[in-house]
Figure 1 (cartoon, rainbow, N blue to C red):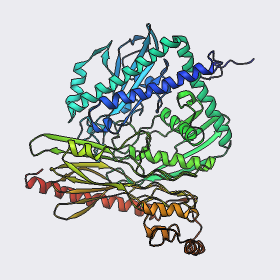
Figure 2 (tube, one colour):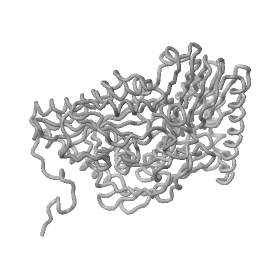
Figure 3 (cartoon, one colour):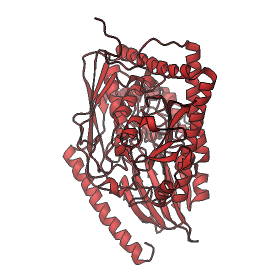
Figure 4 (cartoon, rainbow, N blue to C red):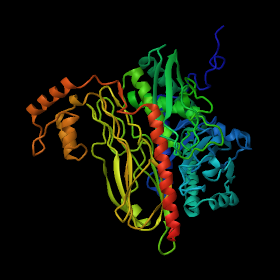
Length: 634
């Protein structure tokens, strides 16, 4: 007997589809445009810099089963509804469900400042899908401005938790819920404005889906959603068959520095193998959850999405990524690990582990398909500056900083770029206009890029001068570990933070701090890590090295020592001297490792250094806080 597709356990969209390719392509592109319109609605109506200027938000359109058809993350609709008092059949046009609790979304958003809004879409009374959007609010309470305390030991210290509730019921705003939530924020005006802007983004998405139904008919739209899911699933299966050998196991591990409390380094380990048309990804061997807030509650569907996106980005970017391939990628994440912490473990600084996840995934793929990708700057550093202006007006800003993006075969890494392609930097003019600070320098960090035939991206060097007393909080990583190089490439430089008091006193700070007092005239030098290189640096085009020197990305000294390139006084390449220098380096160096993690001390020594660094910082901070209070500036 031949089993039909449903009986074989295949998704219901795996079938022959009654829609022509032209219509399908038109609807696909219309859906993509909906996503971008939702982006624009939100970023042009939000108030806080982290959304308005940096676009730290993500929209998606899901089908009526809650599966993502277009977007950037797997859809959490099913989990949100399971943890709410609402059933699908009870939802109506104009409803909007809001939540910011990662544990009630299985990690679909990963810390409390990320609020998610889910709007069911109805067409002529029939439920046809969902429009979802989340954005990173500037503050949701907790013990530290920005709601990213590096010393939190539970999620209860990180801000207010809102379970799935109806922000709108049939189009009517629930003012009491919104007022309660905003009351717990240090920035209630910005929080309210941003939430309303997110709601407007979902409304725009819902209306555009209805427009598609007007044009093509409801049944054609629903059929197109299924066909797009099916097409992506088929494409991913074909890529896996072509690129990943069956039956072979590929493993890699890397470390994030610490949890902000002196515990580290923290290991992430991933194994990957293919069985037929199923790809297995197993995080067994990853370290247990840690006391500090770098734990990352990794949603299984989200990681399935990441795994597929890597294949699509590396091989065929024309493929639409969506939830269509979630059944062909099987993920195992050990409960109680740093990737699957148990409630109420703190999560606010989870980007440290999240970014290292990408490094590890890229390295496993490098082993499996030969597409070498180096290590990255290692997180999305958050920076918060808050206080009270001399005129008595309170202020608080927050921004995300960037670093070196990995090199890939045939292409250098991007300098000072975000992991997320559509994120932007906050303009210095914006920061200086609205907040009491001067951005004295914002440049690529020279010699932070890992040398290689294709060099890694440079980190950034940003210098803030504070013109009002306040407090700073930030999180970064890759201060104790290096972004690794691949296939002969060298590792990138680690991150570094320096506080320069107005008096000239210089203080080296760790990569994660909370509530450090700063005063008028103080400066913070914020330097992020670079990325590793790919391939032998001695194979890099000497003219490319000369250009990097002209642009200030590589020093003359590094050009000679790392790349063997000798430059004349005018910056041009001395070809004969370069050839001689490269031959000299080749003859004297050892065989490079496949993955170069840099000259790191043994693991036990790393643990001692990390713990001692945190102990000394805590002592220094306690003294600074006491002195500030004694001087009436605390």
